[in-house]
Image 1 (cartoon, chains in turn purple, cyan):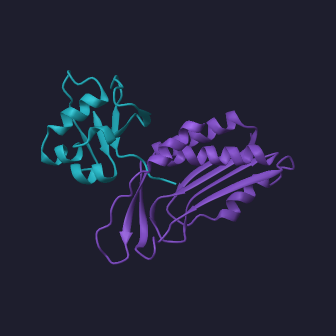
Image 2 (cartoon, one colour):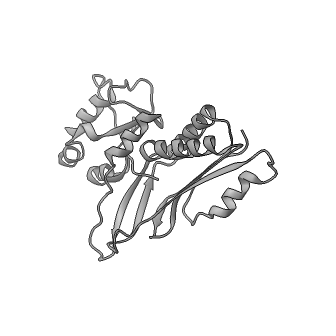
Length: 151
Length: 83
């Protein structure tokens, strides 16, 4: 495998720069699948999301998931970057970019990492309401947990 | 043992982390939750639905029936909502 980059950051994620790293000097890379998860405003109801995380465990858990993906598919590089702190609508919350020689492994690897990241990486979202009212913690979806069983 | 809380568990308990000397009889994560729930109103509220609680020992996910063993840090939190 090539680079395996896992990072948490409080500032904006530069998708192009992060993704370029995977192809640089790697003529064996034939496919890069990029997933970006964005903050929604829920029809104007939200001014943002506060992302709480478990320092130390969050990076370690994403790394474990990425390493598992690298064992299952012939991947040539993985970049996973996740925001913490306040994120506003339209901003990228998470970037997962996976490189391989061919698209099938890159698609599968990216989907696998995202499925596990959703339910296993220790992050929690709290809503910031646009009207200033107290925001709620976002509930986990049962469909996210169910998505793991197909792997 | 160091116990850390996240998200609404942290808000309900009222502190992000604390050091608690658990009784000898508390051997598993689930038993620790039951013990904590008896420490006061805020704890009872935080742990009113034990089945939704997720746990990690020394920063690795564990099921609620996992033994505490020699772990130094127990983290308790709601289901995760990252990504």
